[in-house]
Amino acid sequence: VLGVFGGGVLISVKNCLRPQLVHTDVQNVEQLFVRISVCYGFFALLNVVYIPPNSNLSFYDFYAKSVDLSWESVNCDLGIF
Image (tube, rainbow, N blue to C red; front, side):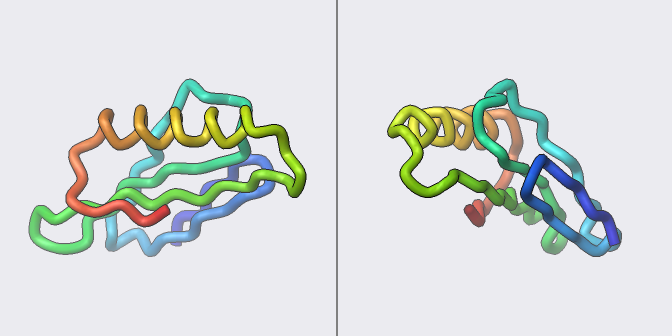
């Protein structure tokens, strides 16, 4: 099992799913993106994020930007956010 930590978030994935950490330049949000192989050339992008309660709207903008950038940087068929 691969465990990847990003500040206060974690994604744990079985190695048989061939997890790959997807790096993002957006550093203002605690988040992780991992690409996994679901089956026979079908890939999914997993994401976890922590945005503290009562955060400024700019955190949501940063998060939306990082989702867009990450999705565009990988070839995935499905996204789970």
